[in-house]
View 1 (cartoon, rainbow, N blue to C red):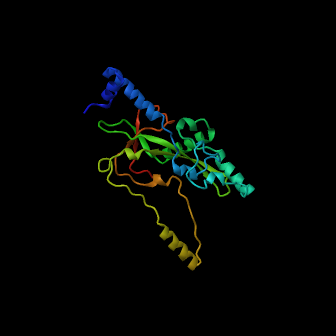
View 2: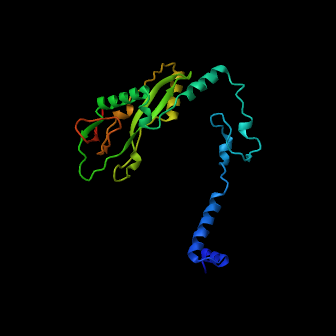
View 3: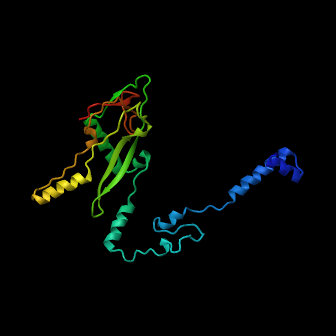
Length: 236
């Protein structure tokens, strides 16, 4: 069966090489001329209070963006929303270093990791691979919309590890909601007082049986040269 390009050449009276070029050029032009449409589900959302830039009519009979109004929102709630949207969470270390608040938060995180003896600086052993890492930036708000703290966490990219080779199991002891309800019910029944506490850097209080090496975080400088961090088995 002849190829489409050669059939095209026979019809146009061109050589096969010229026909191949023209055929595929026209094919690419046909693909690029297609109209790109936004996904239907995007039409159910309002992004930053602006309408979609698409000129095509939405498939929804009553699109939300044409009927949404903020006239009924109270002044306090509007102020609350403005406080949340006025701050931006950095997406990279370079972006965070431009704001002194995030720099201070990163220093606090590194200080906590150092005081807890999270890692030791060592040479990477032969045939060992270090795990990459990254910074996570989050803004925690109070109930009234005020900023509670600029929270920074330094995490490893554990998804690069292989189950059965780098680790055997993953487990995190977390209380079930049914247990919380039972405790609250018992306290209410017997008129008991409850106290809540928050353990700072609680994830550092566990034991580690595996041998784990990680790359040093951005912003951490060692005077001993190029080293990696060996996660200590007992971090308490």
